[in-house]
Length: 180
Ligand SMILES: CC(C)(COP(=O)(O)OP(=O)(O)OC[C@H]1O[C@@H](n2cnc3c(N)ncnc32)[C@H](O)[C@@H]1OP(=O)(O)O)[C@@H](O)C(=O)NCCC(=O)NCCS
Image (cartoon, rainbow, N blue to C red; front, side, top):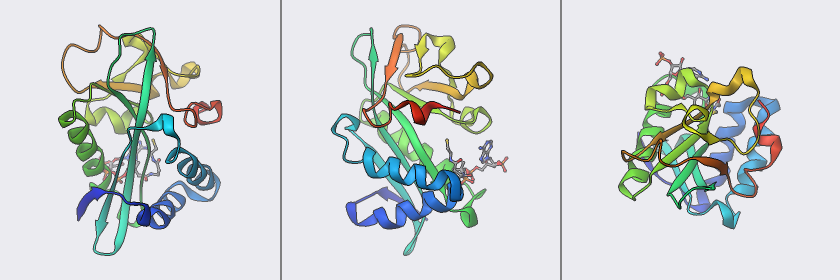
């Protein structure tokens, strides 16, 4: 399996992966999120990685820019969305995509990465609750899902120093994407 940056030519296959992984209800929402998010100038810089096995795209992860209101400028991104073909799940494809993305962001001088997702999955990569570190989500997260709003620092000394309200790109900041 190889991991590489996506090109425009990959997106039919990439969207098919999200459609299948998220299923008939959530799939179309994620596909239209991708359609709008990729050309959104406020999402840049983006990091878009796919996992492939020969001609088959097995998984995809996207990181887009966020800014933290009320804080000093910081290189921060958010991971969304992530998907692996159902037939390729539980074989480490998601893990390799997330780890490759985090490494590339770190190597490029990234400081913080956010995610809204299942803590049972994302804590294994080093994500921790963001609210407790003074980093508010763009929209209130229901209290029962508070732990799903997570962050990790890619270099030490950022968490605890940088606090404020996170603003994602124009498209990803829409309230509909923050209702759990
Ligand atoms: C979440 C997802 C990307 C994981 O991909 P994957 O390639 O199967 O992940 P990995 O093989 O690296 O890890 C699998 C492990 O994560 C666990 N896992 C997968 N999804 C999980 C979830 N939502 N919550 C908790 N654990 C999860 C699996 O049970 C498995 O555990 P194990 O290692 O103890 O057996 C994939 O299941 C998927 O595409 N799901 C549908 C879309 C989705 O929910 N995306 C995430 C949105 S934030």
